[in-house]
Length: 263
Image (cartoon, rainbow, N blue to C red):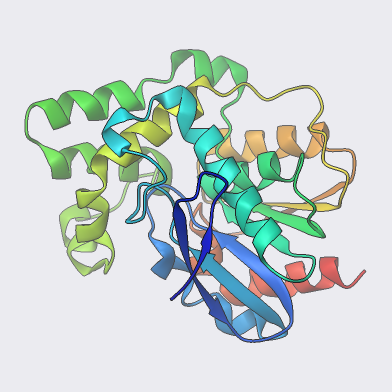
């Protein structure tokens, strides 16, 4: 795994796969960098750069001392540092919280384009009532780590319910790692609940905003809102795809992204 230095002299670890224009892949709150394994082969013309997000193994600061207000700023700063350190004009490809990070980082970082799958932005009315972080934190205080993370799975990944959730989670390779990272997921959710989408996002480059019909309705609404706030963006909705779109339908996502980037 290669490393580069951040603006505060801490190390940022990342993997690089292939050659070509850098494609920095930013995973969401529940998935470690292994989330991108099924996606990378569909972007063979690019050099996929997959960083280890702060709080997910390599922290830029003490995760126990990181406030909700600092979480998004912390992640945006490491992405901007990575952009500066990598040769070439990179593309940012973010999923969920990684998509929000990508869009915010692009307001100042010199990137060629942004691909954002369902940015973790809450519509205003929904945001004011959101309490997922509090519910998860309460379960963590009671020692119920798995139950805490299940609340996230139920609300964000499978809002329509899933038969035999415990059985599904037992077969999900990244589930043990997600449970270990429960505190980070709570901090991330607090940051999402506090984030207010501005009327205009000052991103000069083109942005492809993606969403799916089988994910949470509030994230589909948010994808449209993010699209409207961007000066140069395209919105694409995938029929039958959930919030886990890049990992669930990588070929379809990659084909749309490739067409957009080659326009």
